[in-house]
Length: 299
Length: 210
Image (cartoon, rainbow over all chains, first blue to last red; front, top):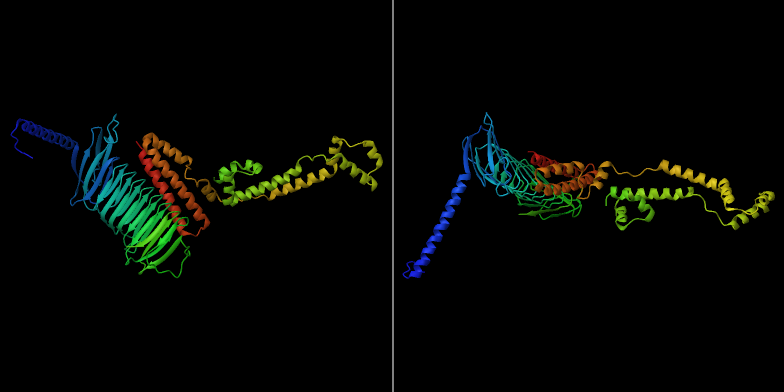
């Protein structure tokens, strides 16, 4: 390619190219400026152990942990038809961020979106409710309560907290959640757990599937229940579990070495139930379904 | 087909014998099978109460002749009647053998009615069978969905589908718990099924609020 055209036609082509590049740059600048206008940031003092509540139907919500005593909330609206109400009570124990349409406005699905990025101090509990907005939680240590109809719920790197998740069709993904009380209820959304441990881990689903990768450590109670959803559990050889699986109208498969128990209240039924222990059997694991398929495998 | 639907068409089944889907339900439902057996028995016994058909006149003639030959029927009475007419025959039958059979049938029918104990399933199981179809939603569910649809019509489908699924879950879990009341696993499944429904209600109510 000749960067320095000498002919008249070449100069015209070069000028057109420069004009196009300039137009694209201007377009991006205008879009960025518009986005910047719709992005707002706020810092709010919060008392230790306080609570942050966010209600945002569509868009996205991301929460991370950061040191300090302030909640840093940044949100970007996708239109002027919605706004975010910010409420703080006098003792700074509770902060609310609520998305709502302005009076008389009927925003479309895209216009109603608001993207939140929030950091909270350690120990602050959060309560997030969405319809289609995905929720991402990273590294929090307070209690977490999340509810979404269709937006994916992701919780990473959380320790020593209560994690409560409700979903209708939303996929739920929990990873590296340790020493936690976990309660997940999902109607049809799949639930994926990786390295999730704690004194009590319960997952219930109607027709959603559940899969678990981890060692069920901590000597806790692990109870996974479905109506017709499948349950799949991958355990490492060192897992210390007292495990029972049962699906009276479905099927069970075990490919993990379990030692049969001498005394069983409910004798196993071939293809429908099994139970046994591995190592010292320190954690209790109950996998139960009405008609789903249950598989236990070795990692 | 569930028990409620079956029992709605029960009179036609007794009369005509039923369709394949109804016969299929009978194969899987001992309660409805017992109910049909009982009703068929009652129907058979009740036939005895219907007016008797007149036998052929020759039958009565032969009976009269036999009775006269054995001296049990005065000849004068027979000659006074002449030949046996239909009306007089009917009257005669009800006054003798007919009354006896009708009385017997009445006693049998009364005994059947007195001893009839339909094998009604416990309410939980009956409810389970009635709601075992995924399409079932009770009145509260429908009201909830209607209110939700007023707030957001797009949300209706997801909640309807989930409510039907969870109702089916509850029905199946109830059945499992009923089969073995000491089964803790079945009880936990039932508990989870109700937790699922509670969750749906809480989320739908929150969504319906202005």
